Length: 222
Length: 215
Image (cartoon, rainbow over all chains, first blue to last red; front, top):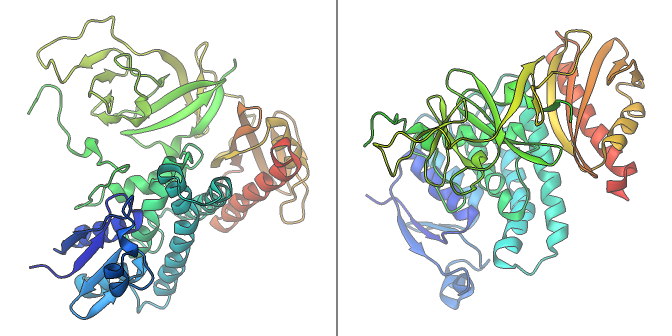
């Protein structure tokens, strides 16, 4: 049974966040493909009637319409994670940290996300300026993830992956699309690997599955 | 070209692959399931694909493009399109010297890797890249205080920050790009290590502000 409808575009890192979170939680949904580029269908009258902000993704569940990606992650975890671990909202220590990271995820969208759109779709922004902002944001992410490594931790918050990891993952993973390689970011590299290792992980163009997880020795061809 | 520090052992667990660079040479460094490490020219002998995009299967590195497997010796051990073929010994990667000491991975593109000699036991802190010359990083290290103490150089990349000992290892990646590996006295508290990690950021900012990269 489908729990919601997602208006989505295949190359969008923000749309992918929602697809990934739904897959990790095993939540079935219906997809409506929107021609973001080159059609700019998300700014058509029909789409603006649904989402006046003219952005993607859009999540519709009954009468509820969400247009902010991080809110969609919160909605998914609140409604479809009985363990409460993906969004420990009521935990006085962890809850605010998750919210902090959701804000930083939005910053990444405005830097690394724009740098990528400029690189792959020739988006009309100052490419050098957004690339520089993205590099700085990735350096801060690397610093904070290094804190976690030194503390013996894997995830951004607590000892279980949260919507904070999913919110920050796609733009960090896709930064090489904008020429921002991960060579100088070992903590980011290992955290990306941990996210990609999660059961139920799904891919998007530019983020492939971990082939090594499907162990098959040469002596044992399929 | 002497041996160069390309990263921390901690940052390359078993079954993992990373990209490195020494003297302009693009390198893949990977660790097999059994913990053994190897460093090769970052090109698959088959079609030239970057092997750093590859993945580890058992104790072999597989190229992401056509799945050719290379064992630690660099020899091709399996070609998926010809599963019954025993690949000829002439198909092999270009190997470089690699060794690990003090939690640091050292690579030498010309000879057997010899680790830089640290005269005392140190713990790895972190590895980062600054968009400035090696000289600018070293100059900034002399003028970036940690908790009010200016680092006092004591030879061969070693510094004293108050009671803390610190080693700054550099690997020039280009005229304005330097990989920096930082080690510290062992047994420091987590709080001190987090503060030193931030000192590394300040060091990079200072270097980039004063070095040619920030001009």
